[in-house]
Image (cartoon, rainbow, N blue to C red; front, side, top):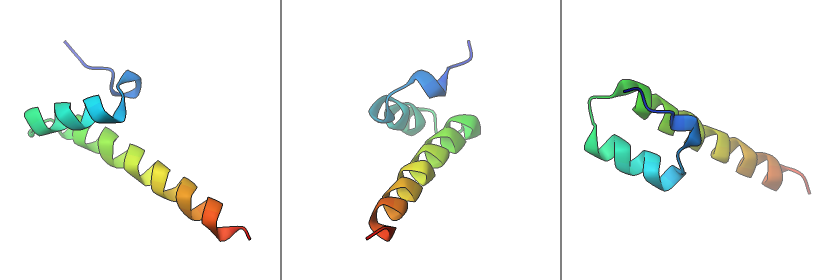
Length: 48
C-alpha cells in the first residue's frame, strides 16, 4: 500500500522516514517539506 505523504503531519512523516529508512520517496517528501518551510522563513525575514 502506497502512503500519501502530503496528508501526513510533519511529525508523522518524520517518524515514517525514521522507521522506513530505505523509502526514498518518503525521504524526498520530508526534504521538500523542510525546504518549503525554510523558504517561507527566509521570505518572511527578508522583508523589513
